[in-house]
Image (cartoon, rainbow, N blue to C red; front, side, top):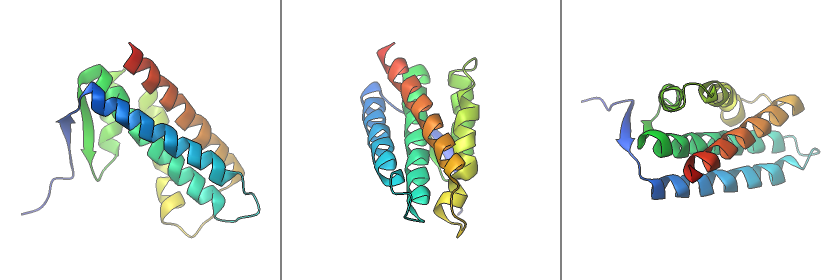
Amino acid sequence: MSRAKGRREPFSKAQATARLGYARKCYELGVLGGEEPEDAYAGKVAVTLYVLAGIASADAICAARVGERWRGEDHRGAVTLLEEAVPKEQLGKLLASLLDIKDKAQYSPALIRSAEETRARRVSEQLIAHAATALRG
């Protein structure tokens, strides 16, 4: 029997708050790691953490808006759920941009360019801010 590649699952506001805390910590550690320009791998680590921050933020946003999150190996399902949860915000595109660089940051031998790291940092900041707003509302 093959395992499902992904599914929606109920997710509470308390769980969403915890995911936002995790997103913030990933972001914070990404900033620290990215501050070592002489380290060739610092950018890869920083971007990996920004991607994790973005995914966790998307979980928090979706939980706050529709009471669900995406769970599965294919994170693109989270993009679809995020677009459904907040259709006018274009947040799905932000998450998709982080997922586009995920493989390069985590699995490729190619290094991350400074512009890619900066973009990933900014996108994760935006998603964290939207998650915080969604949980307040």
